[in-house]
Length: 315
Image (cartoon, rainbow, N blue to C red; front, side):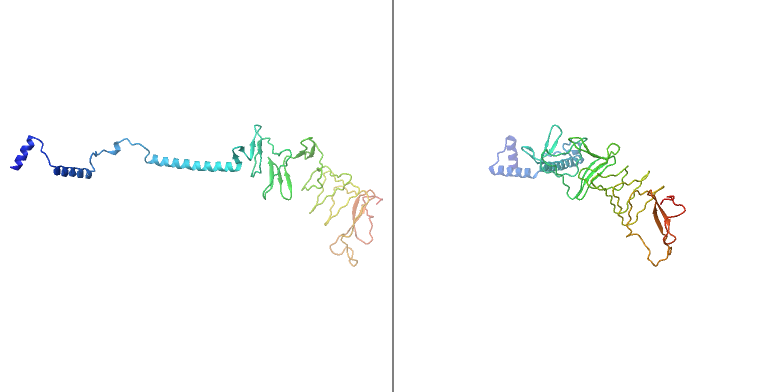
């Protein structure tokens, strides 16, 4: 009967609930809502949706590009710092060098460089009233143009060239030294006392009238002439530690007073017999005209009178 009565009441109008019933119903609805995570969820196939952003390989490529740009930025920063430290760029410009419209590059401070390659027809110089100081740290200073090379070292300065060389005064254009022997006669520059060469080919070697001509060698010296060798001077002296050999196709002529120091010439003891052992002795003879010839010594007190005497009757 009460259920039928309540049904009849609901059909006639809304059922009024008490405050307690409303609070219980509200609490149950909130509890169900908080525990229902699938509320409003609609299952959709994600592969059919339009994708946005960088994913997969494109994302990895983007990361690599960003890393590469970061590395380039770091390298650029390092180069900028090095240039700023070396060139010393400040608010007033560059403190270590100047650039001019004529192409001149002027270094205002001491510069440390390894190899310099000037352009075609370039000039390296200093200021008008200052010296240009070039220093090599435990290394020679080398100036090279093609096959011509100038090397400055601690104990020597050498110049090497396959095409020749020429030194001249830039103001007067006077030639001080040249290897063009067909046009200019070879002269030692002023202040140069000696010339060290391994081999020299020339028509004649002379000294000035107030000094001597000295030719010195550590080993042996060979003087050869295609058409003969002529040695002329007020006094000619030969000092040798070993042997002296004179060879000629026709004759050897000594014109003047000839003196030979016999201190170093080999000699036999008084007890040796003439011609004993393997020794073959010769006597050096000279004609009145200076022609030298040798005579084999076969007996004591032998003179220069032989049948094939090249001097004739006068000797």
